[in-house]
Length: 198
Image (cartoon, rainbow, N blue to C red; front, side, top):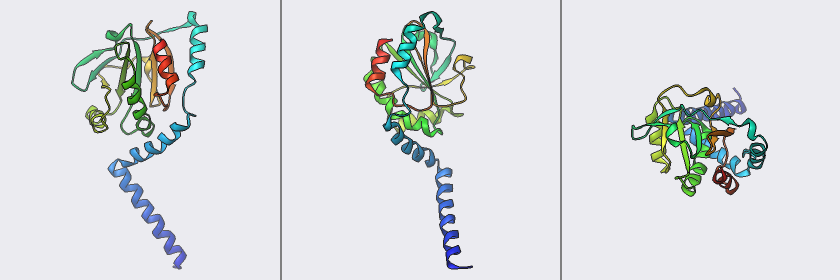
């Protein structure tokens, strides 16, 4: 074997070991999430709030009634029905600890949560992790202030998605007016103003 081939085998072997260690320890999610946070900072992934506002103002007759039949459990083990938040603006985010885009957007959601009026806006961070304890530990480890939830019954068809993170917003009239698939920066002032106006 020549020296060049040995060098390539050694380089690829080391790279493989590093990737395996990152995967086995779960650190790959944090690293990819960190890289995607940089992508979020560019603003390309953010939803066009002005287009959503314009669409909801012109299509008032075709507003979609939200399904309030979503039943959850919070980190304290208390059962929560989405129905109890009727009349508030509801921000629902489906996420998981193993999902890098979810990890990437979490800091912005926490900052948004800390700067909104939670008497008027409810934030439902719904974990789809197989073990809810992982979501609770992840929230606590990162010192996020929002509550985390897990479904305790079938998720209504309106909120079923093959993509996470997925975010839904229901206005105070009980209409689903916003759906965003993928990560976004929700701590932007235009987005917070949009929530406040609903």
